[in-house]
Image (cartoon, rainbow, N blue to C red):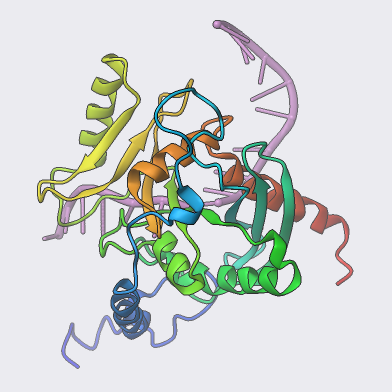
Length: 283
DNA sequence: GCGACAG
DNA sequence: ATCTTGTCGC
């Protein structure tokens, strides 16, 4: 092929743990994109009324006021062990709503062949998480969550189909995306990290705590929310079978700290599992 | 070429 | 994501 001269000939081999060769996986990413475009047609953006039916009509701040039918909320997270860049542990937890008591927690060791690429998080994480949801349904169907909070974005994503959407569609479970950092969307040039931070500060100064993430196109991608006592927002977006207003309300009601409990527990317990793993190397 | 970059 | 204990403060 034509490129540079025969002098600076690039080495043919690159595969090995930690080597990020986007070119070598270009075809896989393209296939993955096409798969996503099909799945995206199945995305549901309105509320699942059985889960989110509103109780009463408009007064009295009760913890369960908005979601009288909601009992179980799930949370998923994947933590890395440090032993090789592809070695990780995935966690799926289920909490009781609104007590936020953990009633189910499962972990699974796994390895990744492909690197993390912004915009393609689902490519790595969906397979393992989908398997864990299937296992839960088989082993303890009575503990299957009515909705799952995912550590990553929903429609707040370059192709409008982040990890939360993807996991929601393939499992047919309602999902909400909760990201700890803002992912810029190429098409919305005005929605940059700096601008969002700036506008969020204005909201805070005005006594508010929530910023609608509306791009120049007019589309609402999600919301930046500073949960009580925090200045650094979390970025909430719809995954599947839920509306943004409902997603924001539910996430708020799951927050004891900055990160909603289901995700915080999934993260915390997964790390704990990794620590205990080191003591017992006997496989 | 440069910047941006969920976990 | 991860390297990392104690510590300053409401």
